[in-house]
Image (cartoon, rainbow, N blue to C red; front, side):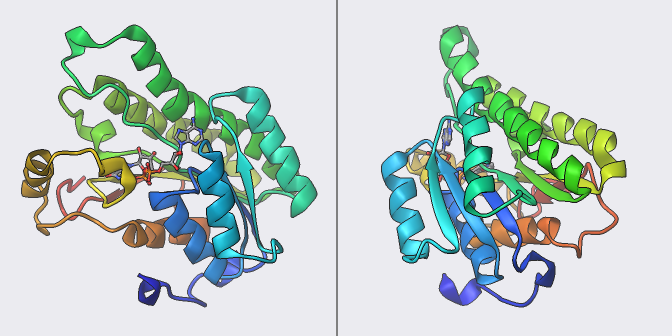
Length: 258
Ligand SMILES: NC(=O)c1ccc[n+]([C@@H]2O[C@H](COP(=O)([O-])OP(=O)(O)OC[C@H]3O[C@@H](n4cnc5c(N)ncnc54)[C@H](O)[C@@H]3O)[C@@H](O)[C@H]2O)c1
């Protein structure tokens, strides 16, 4: 999809330091490619150590523009280590994308093991909170920052048999609104987005029947591509997004019109 990568569109991104969680795959990786093409320095942060090292090397063999960091975003010490690593490698973090996420238990709610619920909430919600908290410490001092939290249409609408995912993504939308209001006077813009089904490895295990059902709800009649999601994220990270904070952007092919 290289032809979809446009440069010079997001001029303010040039030279900025970005942390992307979930950066080894899907939406996070597509965003890394676009930010890199627009001159940012990027730390890919991901649970999958092998993938994150490989993808970072693939994007930039010199290591001058891209670095990899393996962590579990729900672990506070590891999140703190991520931001210390980034500061030492590239300098203060100006851009943060929280894209790390898991589907969690996809079954009737009465059969859900509480530990599986807790794990999904820990990654999707606690991880987003912890990364925001660490990023905002530095951004507050600089008086500048841009944060994008990847939520989901499930967080707006609530998908059946996906209680932990839907609840944690709904909470990410509310967390974004709360933080945006708290830090708006410090030059920190914090927005979220709610994609519908996107063609990434997260959907590898989704059955053809379920995919067809989900596409059936999308007026544009297809799944989205991670590069399309990266476009809206890059815009939110750029100074072109100058009068919007706390918003949850739709990217659902028309499924949600609110
Ligand atoms: N693909 C979709 O249809 C879709 C739709 C709506 C929202 N989303 C959201 O978009 C975000 C990105 O998903 P994707 O589609 O790119 O999926 P993906 O599976 O391709 O990428 C998710 C990445 O997050 C990483 N990750 C998982 N748990 C982690 C942890 N504890 N710590 C650090 N990294 C961890 C994974 O290793 C993986 O590389 C997720 O938050 C997801 O919920 C995806």
